[in-house]
Length: 127
Image 1 (cartoon, rainbow, N blue to C red):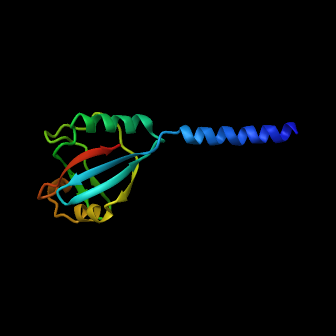
Image 2 (cartoon, one colour):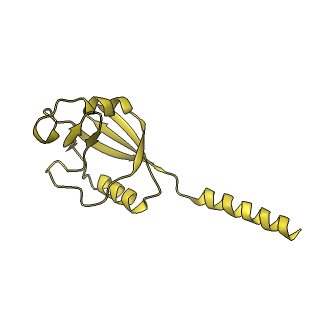
Image 3 (cartoon, one colour):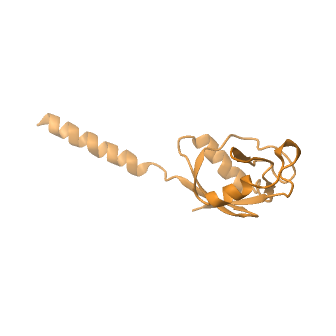
């Protein structure tokens, strides 16, 4: 009987922990080529929280994608004045807008993999 109560208590504890975990943050990256929706991982809370702080401060307002390598990556993080993001790498997952990621990846680039025509972003955090 004690074993059954222990197992029930353990199951209830696990369920309560799961219910109190913060839901993953959703951000929408509005670009000049369309919108990209991302889900930020809770596994890296310092990175996530720094990113949210920078978004709320307007860091990414009209920020460019400053490095693009087709079939590999699109990179942003500098602000519109060219300053580098003072924080951490962000870990997340694109949940909508992969077609926009592909459009950005396909832009013509020049020296240093910088897009010939600037692709900018503005990011908003969804509540």
